[in-house]
Length: 119
Image (cartoon, rainbow, N blue to C red; front, side, top):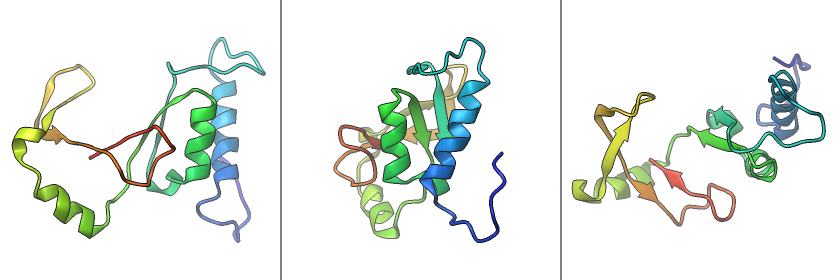
């Protein structure tokens, strides 16, 4: 947790980076000045979905997962894609989740270059 002034902005990437750095320092085996690598997954909701934060996470070679709402026009377009193009979604035990499907989407300007968005 990071206490901030009441007038602080809501999507301040610098604040998110500070919180993530502090969290990483608490991990067993953390060595200052080193990057923990892809074994660490940073999960963020839509408030952390900024290009600056995602670029920093990629630069640290961390894995990440970001949840965010899609604009209605994109949701409408995704609905037109046949069910045969979707794959099963899996839970933490690697079992298929009932009623959950995954569709890989490319070409959206929401992720750092070379990354993908799934919905």
